[in-house]
Length: 116
Image (cartoon, rainbow, N blue to C red; front, side, top):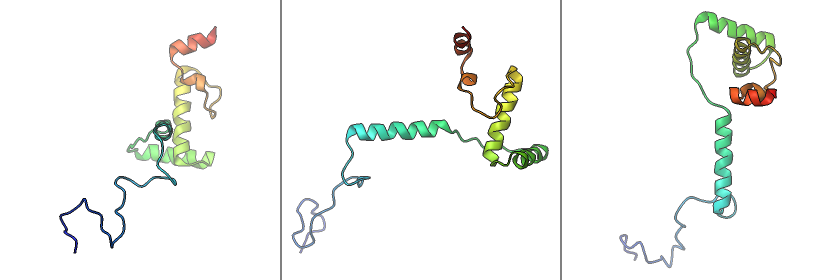
């Protein structure tokens, strides 16, 4: 008979105890470098798309529905396009409305460096 308070002696009849900690994702535990690489990749993916929750007026919702119908895209893509178009029209850049232009996202310092 086993003492329920004894956590150190192995049970000879019941088999071995499970290892402490989380189960590995693969066949074996990851090394520190593998864990860090995975963590950086997950963080990079998380930072690429930020979530925003907003309430739209009825007029804005109708306009969004029209954009979705015109462009034939998802609500997310329609909002992304509308935001880029609005920002580009305010800054005077009307080219490349639907392609993401990395130079457009640079700071003023980066834009000055690019114009040289």
